[in-house]
Image (cartoon, rainbow, N blue to C red; front, side, top):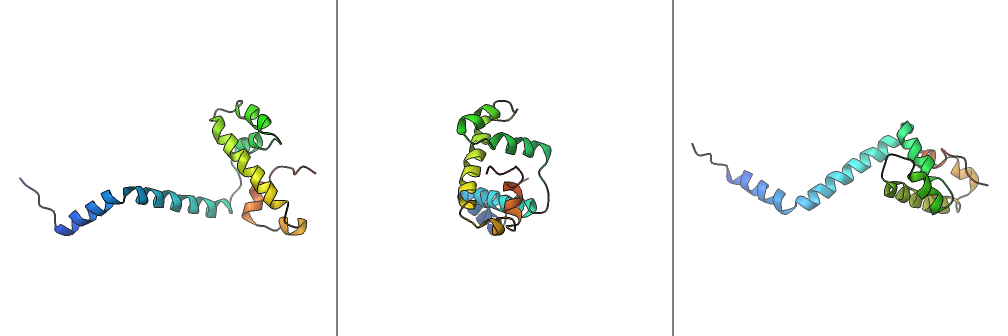
Length: 116
């Protein structure tokens, strides 16, 4: 028994195969956008709080040492540490009263005590 597909289905399948990398990137970007939008409406779960605490030390060596005590890959903690260092540098350029009202982004950054 032979199955014949309509020409339209063949064109769609060819397009999906040709653009599979862009489709994957689009799906990942959409999922990331949904996660960022959702992050503003919830708190960190215990696992995320451990990651944040391990990435929070002032030095790369401290973050690396804390990362070795977790069950997750140390590279993830070091990337998170780099992000937090960069975000803290950017936040330090913003006036203090405005920092308290930044919204969802500051909820994550302000979860741990800020060094004075």
